[in-house]
Image 1 (cartoon, rainbow, N blue to C red):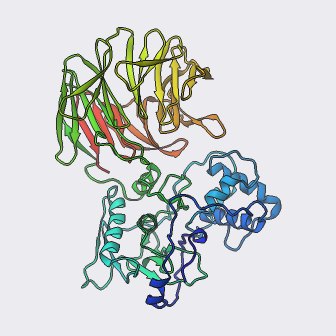
Image 2 (spheres, rainbow, N blue to C red; image 1 turned 90 degrees about the vertical axis):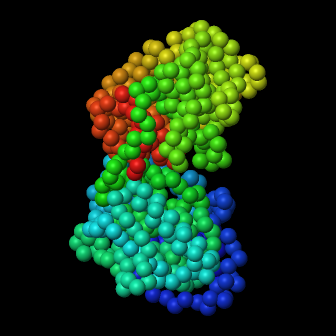
Length: 568
């Protein structure tokens, strides 16, 4: 019989399991439940009183990250300390009391790999996690790998299974100087094997990957990704995520402490994009593809580039993509499939472009504002000329103007009507989150904020003369200080966290879950999600700016106008 969805878990172990497959006809008839619900399952109402359940979750979490020796248990007096360690990873208040947030996360399908005991990580209780991703240690010593299906599940066609597994390998290969292909039937042995085995109705595992290595090298033919065939693999989200996660193990990665990462051990039913934490880990093992960057345009007249990127939970817009503004006033959009640029406007008066929520806007030198219709070079006139307009900022589904007199105005969506938001004297820059919260940096360094629908004016959030730039990525807020520090606002416990203290960052850019920094030497870095841990993407001294989309794609503009796309 099928194991109910709400009690199912994803299992990755270091050992092989031996069990006979049940009758295939019975399995097919039994598969009537959806494996992963679209939203998190309703919590068991008895969880607050169920101390045994709570203790199991806490022990499982510790084993996922190697914080507990095999067969060891956490004593009752040590439970509050253990809970605070988990809460630190989950970025929630460290109360030492098991709460609903912990129950929600740890009730999800999970990977139950018993990671080797990591004493240094296990005993550290301070708030700094210096590395989120974890490497097993061994890796493949060759650049061409093969995989093979030992058998298939009856839940969906073999062609579909091959396509999902191939796509999962491709997701990692996009960042690696490796080639991983399905082995031909005539090849006696593949490096990695994919198989489906019944682990029994009492088994709580989705899949596991055994890690067999000879010293520092993976053992060819002995690396098995095993799916529990007592589950329904017809759910593409489940199969996709499980395959990508397990292949990460097969390449040498363990679990990450970053919730948005592929290698985070709990599954919330969402197909996640590759996270900087995942790419930093895999690049640490195997390096980068060559070339790392591809030039997509060469024009000394390139003045600026922007990226329009719809939130992943929304339907992508036809206008999403990369745009550039040239000193001639031309606005161009990039078509990746043909590696070509298309002119969408040619007006010598265009001074700035901005975009968000599937909309492109431009500001002219006279302060007038226009929105792109999406057709040819047709633009809608939405803002009258005004020498009071300083710049425009697009965010969520809104467009704002910042004025010299300190007022911020928002387009109403109708004609030339704009709604003003309370005045803030000496505004230097505004940034807006996906939730339409407006952050306003004043010339004296003060930070003020106004929340949607902006009826209560501005609230002072920070008084710091060192504040020099602000950016938002999704719901997150960051600031750059004149001393080169990059600081993130922890929005749960609500305090400032320094995430880069090298002191040489000169500009930052954020989108979705990603934030990038350009240093004084021109190098471009991407934040991994761990304070002080950044991955270097480029080291060109001539870099002028960097932009990206919410899926992790990155573009860089050089001082001479060249535009490059990050390949891996």
